[in-house]
Every structure is written in structure tokens, then in C-alpha cells.
Image (tube, rainbow, N blue to C red; front, side, top):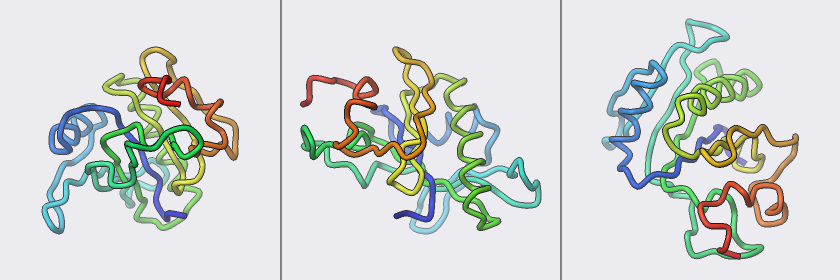
Length: 158
């Protein structure tokens, strides 16, 4: 399980371009960090002295060749945005991630999915289906494919 929340984004744009559009749409600061990583941050809603944000990169977690029960919803997205909260409170971090995702869905930039700790699918947005907040405990993995399959780019990849 990851200690971060993750927003997966479906686009063929490079991480630099994605981060720039996210920064503009969500009122975030864009900067380069360690090893030239691309980061976004802004003051957290829960505590303005803390920050919410993280690195935007190529989806290093995806297995684009997976199919059927082996396929995860995460495999269908090219970009991952690893979100954290400097206050180090997991519940606040997840709430901040939900707020960011809601704003991202409203901006309608690209199809996206919010995943808590890599094992709980929280929400999905795409222009065909709109915004869906999934039931608690929904997995992004193949065992619950019937729940999230409409959010695949091409549901024929069975």
C-alpha cells in the first residue's frame, strides 16, 4: 500500500505539459524537484500552513499489455500524479486529494481516476460517464472490473 494518493490521467501529452495545465486549472505552483521531477503544490484547504501536491510523471505503475483479470484500471492511464499532504495525516490527505480531484473533474481536461494508496478506487471522471464516486472499498484491480470497466478507454481489451 502506498502512503500517497494517486491521480491517474489519460493523455498523450508529456508530464511537463500536463503539469503546466494542471497548475493553471487548479491554482497550483509548478516547480522542478530532485532528479528534474515535475511537482505541483498549493496550500491545503484543511490547514493553509500545510501543502498538498506532488510529482507528475509517466505512469510507472502501468502494465499496458495486461488483459482480463490481470488488468487494472491503472494500466489504462499514461500519467500518474502522486499526491501527498505535508501534515502527514492520512485522512486529511485523502480529503485534500478528493478536493483536488473534484476540481480536476470540473476542469474537464482529461479522463482521470483517483486511487487511495493504490488499492482503493475512489473516483473516476471521463467525458462519456462524468464524475463517479465509487463505493468504499472498490478495487482498481481485475476482480472488480465490472464496476470500473466503463472508464476504460477501450472496453474491448478483455
